[in-house]
Amino acid sequence: MRRVVVTGLGCVTPLGNDVETTWNNMVNGVCGIDHIKSFDATDSKAKVAGEVKDFDPLKYMEKRDLRKTDLFVQYALAAAQQAVDDSGILGKVDEERFGVYVGSGIGGMQTFYDNSVAFYTGGSRKVSPHFIPMMISNIAAGQVAIRFKAKGVCVPIVTACSTGTHELGEAFHAIKNGMADAIIAGGSEAAVTPLTVAGFANCKALTLRDDPQRASIPFDKNRDGFVLGEGAGMLVLEEYEHAKARGAKIYAEFVGYGNTCDAYHVTAPDPETAGGTRAFKLAFEEAGLKDDEKLYINAHGTSTPLNDKGETKAIKNVLGDRAYDILVSSTKSMTGHMLGATGAVEAIASVLAIKDGVVPPTIHLEEPDELCDLNYVPNKAVKENIDVAASSTLGFGGHNAVIVFRKID
View 1 (cartoon, rainbow, N blue to C red):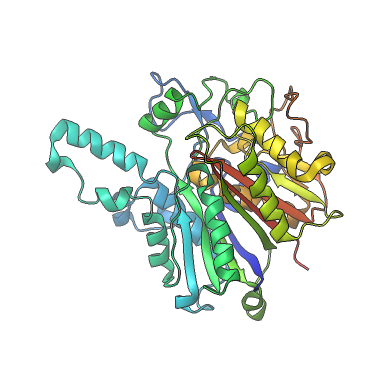
View 2 (view 1 turned 90 degrees about the vertical axis):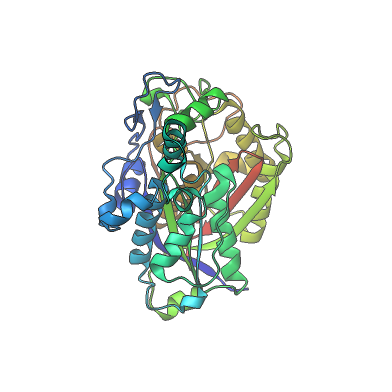
């Protein structure tokens, strides 16, 4: 089997509009969550979100194209451009061996909302001719492929919160199994809209707290729901010999992937955590995790009562007593939950934890839940020479995904 490495990173997040800013703020425990600014949330149950700030799409696309692209596509193109530029891959890979695995959990929600209102108030003639290609969740992958002339494998995946992680895992296997030499992989989401916030709030998934500093508090005893976030994360994955031959900068090696389903409930995780446990087990087995390797897990850590204790249980099921010796943190305490983008952004955090030897914290963790008893790196980053980093995401519908990276030899 061929080896797969990470050669490019790009992101747009509530912590910054590029990787360097996002990572610096993450390591320093900056909270990107605030009161909702993109719409009047006076009548909304949920008042806070992890919104992207001061994003300028004109850095990445022509003004004439803005009205034809939903915000989630704009985020995707920005993050993909950063990752491709960072990798230096353009012109050095066969277009037919260059792929795109980019997904979104929801797609063009603002476009859907705006055109639904237009149809209701003005009839069919008020619906934009660009409505469908702006809204459909596969269009980010299509736009990225068009931008970079990537004519190889192209697979948009929709698995709710696990989308970004599944995209990366499937891209990893595609390169490993010889289907491509390089792939732009990740996820994008722009779902902080009145309709989406109302929907998540009414199904009791969101915290209704008004204090941004006490809203997303993973593993804390007082957690009561997640904070909706937005943004995009993209990684350029590449076959190792291909990357080496062109002198590429290599961040880390991609070594493991686990993909399972709870087959239990549309929103609630299986209380026995069998699916999550198997996803971790499969990923660690493929990675060949060794007992003496320093391990960090960037947890799904949504700040919901069921997820955090269930994920903790899954980690302990797989690692046994070793679970108490590793570092675990949830960067959602700073970004909120970016849905289809979250797995890709957290993969970037995992890769950089290996590269820089720093584990980002779980901020605002003041009173740990008795059932959440691991080392969640509370409130302050920890310097640690990490050998292996894993990232997990667990989505609505019971979708579980875990990916693993290792320090490159």
